[in-house]
Image (tube, rainbow, N blue to C red):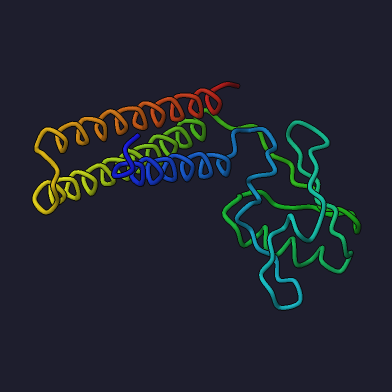
Length: 184
């Protein structure tokens, strides 16, 4: 791969990775510890990820269990979960916090699949914007440096092929996540 378009490949990969990261936070009826990734707990005045203040386990298919390293953090963890957009009310028995994921209704599944498609479309827009920036840079390159029109055209074709590959990857991710959500 030409060094001049390698930077755009890396940017497109980051856009795809961001989409995958977003998809891990969408819950599909099963307990997934990643739904807690964005939640921060006030730990002695410092916003700290839940994973750093306790042990998260999945004892059952639809339950997450959080065992804080310090018992005094139970209230703080509950408060952080309640303030987040997870949409699950935590319960505790004095030593661990449990999050029980309810079965998703058909309507909720459809809403989630719409959200999946929207995030996917946003990722496609990001990839296409990167392509546009790359094409602009390549056109300038053809005017300023000793690069022939044919070389610029070849680089633009390579950039388009790269874009097509990432768009296909985004479509595949949308399809897989939608299938996961719609499976009862």
